[in-house]
Length: 378
Image (cartoon, rainbow, N blue to C red; front, side, top):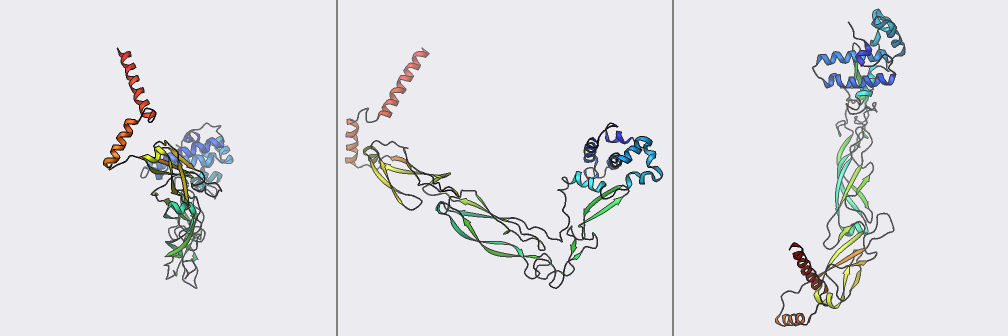
């Protein structure tokens, strides 16, 4: 005896269309044969679920079922119940529910033309090139449209023909009882066309592999990791299909002197102890090739930064320019001669706390801290 259709779907008799569809989707996903291979009980359950939904989603069939039960569909009543699916029957419901699980809905055939794959090219540039911009020439091995057959894949003088198995649809439908499913046509692989006389140059693919020379415009201010897209410069499409895109991934080489942070540049410059103490100046070469003088005031400490406005990196596609920050590194003298040592020792004897306020102040604060700390402990 057949189970009640409402009980099969797990809904109340007054359930609306939205509730019916939601219950059907949930159960169909659970008991679908593709998810339970070899499980005949699940296959039988799936058929019951489908039959119940096909009946209850149709207002006329549902009204007949509510009045007469399963008897309404016996002996050919209501066109045999759930076995007469048309174009809007189970095949469409199956695609709606399981489309994502099967990789998304397949598009109808477009004459066998398929979009080519996107390609990636890694390019390394210097910081100077990122500063000024450049036009680079690259060579890329990729598939291009076959010149012999103009990308059709067919031998010159011939044309692809409509697939005899699917009549150009790219899909075939298999039906057994009330169970119906569409799958990709095995003869044309979903293209809808077949090639009887393939092009001898590309073997019917409509494309050949060659190395191409391309020009890439790198704008000033480009940053490390930027991706440049060259539309339609990727792999050629199959049998005349549209080409994919080429993506240039840029990497900026580390610089010997400058470090970059956005539009700003940083540079460490060593200066002598006497220059730091007495004051002076030095020159640095910036990325634009100019020499810029930096004045060092008397008593400059190690790590002090000097800002050179507008000497950094240009901002991509904007008129703004970053700054260059010079950080001084005070160098301690090495390999002293006897006379130099004598002079430094004399300088040390003549030095006072005012000459080294930070160091003298530091040790005084440290002494006071631990004396106070010791008093609290006792």
